[in-house]
Length: 210
Image (cartoon, rainbow, N blue to C red; front, top):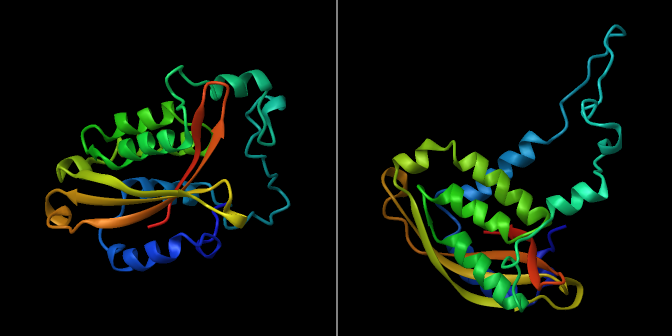
């Protein structure tokens, strides 16, 4: 669950700074996340006809994979990371991930998102893979020659109820043609969580807020 802003005292100042910077175009990453949520929402209704028999959504899956579970061996394979995917410290893992996430061009965006998937696990990996598939089909980004550049300007761990969640503030500039032309630099806030593996620290959740 994404922590509420009020639980992280550090964000009081950052939130004030970014209030005027959230307008403008939609971040392709966030657009993908919203599309994913919409595509996985429950259907509006089920037919009341007695002649209709509902079919479970996972009926086509092997019995042991129904109900949202997969065998341990398959889970391990899915979560496998390359030797260079982890980092020695949480800060190093977050800095690397943030740099890849905010610096891209339309042409290399799908490849960049696959890079993010390769150095993450859990929600962060699934989100990056889904974004890679979606943006690969987004001709508008390429047609408008969109690019995004930025830098990480603040990073800190949450405290109290937000312990375990990190807060990052980035300053980013999006350029391109049409609606993407002339956009001012904008501050963005992201919540992130990590896991410590035998090889080091790795991102497991990446949740942009603005």
